[in-house]
Length: 296
Image 1 (cartoon, rainbow, N blue to C red):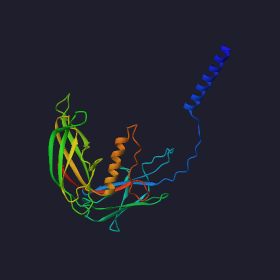
Image 2: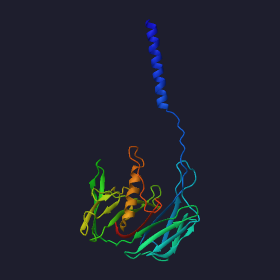
Image 3: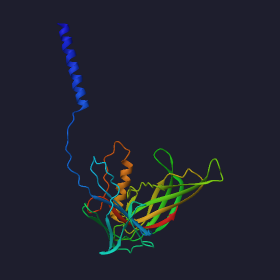
Image 4: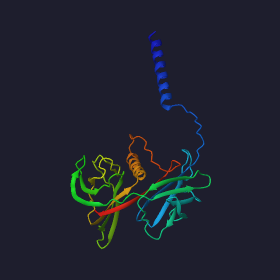
């Protein structure tokens, strides 16, 4: 009788493990995906000092598609100013994008409306509008070398950027930087080498989000933004530039979503981040900004 009981127990255990194996292995379900309708996905960001304007035109692809989503050939790319055609872009193979050479800086007029229109055979046309913002100048930029630390005690350089926000309108800003380091080769000191990198500023200011700033809480005021970044540990001859960009709400929202995407990309616990789009087709982005600069 005892052997019979043990036999039943053994059978129950084997059945349990078999069930668990099926559970972990899972079952195969055949899912028929709906056909994907590819959409145009243009990206274009113009600044006031650009003499060549570039529009990259890509397309959306299905989740299982293997075609190249990067370039759409044969597109018609047009830029309208206050409702009138201002520029027609041509495809430039070296950049795999559409360009127009202005022969001088873009330098748009405050308040002008620019509309980017993109169409191509087989796609629904798409467009987006930008209103040129006012240029806001930097009043002062103060630097405090290793004037702060992060949560782990690592040193941080501190910059205090002061500017006067125009009153009565919604203003949006982007702050970024660029540094060039020249140093002597370790093995041959007669050789000067160069290294450059973009500066990603962080701030504990609640108005600063993912590299962008809104004046919703300081409209019309003289405002000081405290920025932090890691010091340059390369040594050598260092030159840098801070870019203070007055921009549109659409561009600021896109940049914030893009920075949020890159921060979340390698985090297995982060939620999916969708890139913001202001194109009528729902994919891509068009932005314009004007810039003031200061040496770092």
